[in-house]
Length: 111
Image (tube, rainbow, N blue to C red):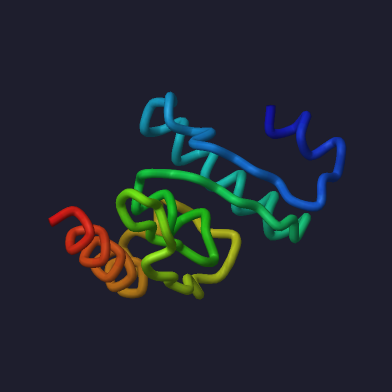
C-alpha cells in the first residue's frame, strides 16, 4: 500500500498505524525503510502511531494529543539525522531524552 500511494506522488502522504499489525523485527525493518524513503522523497507525511519509539524513529515532529476532545497538547522536534536505523538509534542519548519527554507529556495527559 505504501508503494501504491507513492506512485501517485501525493502532496501529503497520510499513514494511519501502517506498521501496527507487524511483528517486532519486520516493524523495525520497515521503520528503517520508511525513514530512507522519507529522506529521499522529502514527502510531507502524517504518520499516526501509538508507539512512542516508532514516533521518534520515523518522525521529525512528534505531536502529543490531549484526550477528548483531541487537541494538540505539545509538539516535540526530533533532530536525529535521517535515515534512522531503529536497531541503533534507540541506544542514543537523544533518543532516550526525547522518549522521556514524550512519555511525561502522555503520562500527565492520562492521569
